[in-house]
Image (cartoon, one colour):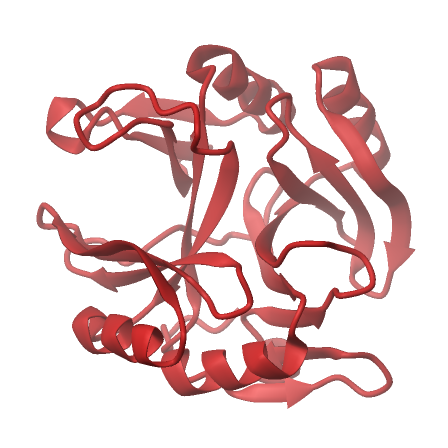
Length: 253
């Protein structure tokens, strides 16, 4: 991935769940992640690291007052970089997005917001302060790719081009486009209307052995939904954790 941040580049992922202790233990066993509670000033948000590299964040599914909210599903959220969150948020709503969380400061770290895009996928935005986002060493246990699985491919392309300045590059022979070309690509948009009933962003986590990791996911209460299968970009498995949140395993070719 390019080192210099661009508009619309994924810069963070975070996880919301209900059974926090058991589910974070699942991820620690699968990926070797460590979770560090940031304390009451940050709502007990946990930073996730792998061998010192920032991977993402995790928190319990709670209301603004800290009480549990069983209506919030267990899920991963992808955050896209913006240099002007107020303008990006306003542009998103004008373009048909629905608000989830309006722009708010996260101490000196930066500002965040969350929306549902016009195709139904939740996505976050992040304007950096002292913190730009995750580390991407592209090593086992760290995120390596991010893509929107959408029910409305043309609308998604237009929305992300206009709101997040996606440089849309279409893939030949397949309804898939990337933000940037070839080695400069940082995210994808996939026409997933044949495979899913909802639009969503999904994240790929690198592993040394996709088959063995998928088997371990099942042993620990998760499921393998698709794969393992080989692709030009490595061996891929679609899995869920014990609470049903989905993510991808990616083994290098």
